[in-house]
Length: 230
Image (cartoon, rainbow, N blue to C red):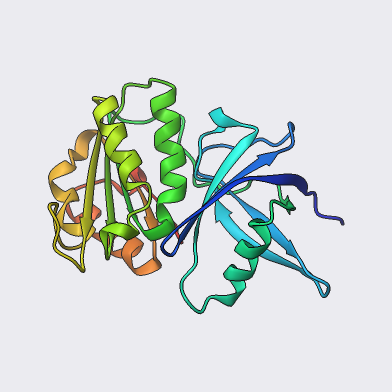
């Protein structure tokens, strides 16, 4: 059975340190829910190489979709993809997939916790909620080693000034700056009201599992914790 794929065109690509911010323009029939992911295919003479990425934007900006790509030194595979994309070439992607999405019923307070490129699906969810004016109180805790490695840092800071129900809590572990220093676990305990809070976690496997355990220990019901590993 042939896999369904959509054609997409590179609309923008920006590099900041090890991060690449990619915007594609997709076909009119492409649909997704905030939090889902897709597969980008890099075509080579030998085969099509798959790259799995969560969509970092809200459905509200279709036909454009945004991705956050992490590409460390020595990652030749991802460097090859970015080099291809920088030429404004067409690329094929699968339909959106995945069950890491916003449930239909949500409590008043929402806590989003991320590290690294794990911010991608969470950003899509938060932007969607704010765009729809749902009135939920949103707290975002985002961690990284260095300030320059905090994805969308300036954009989230600006969003906090614009939306009274959105609060941004960045933290870094490897440098001193004007904000908190340490890991994400140091920030979210004071942001939880177990009776009316749902938490969404995305990042490295160890961080996700440790955060889930700590949230349960703080009294949050496991049914109100939603997670995905990056």
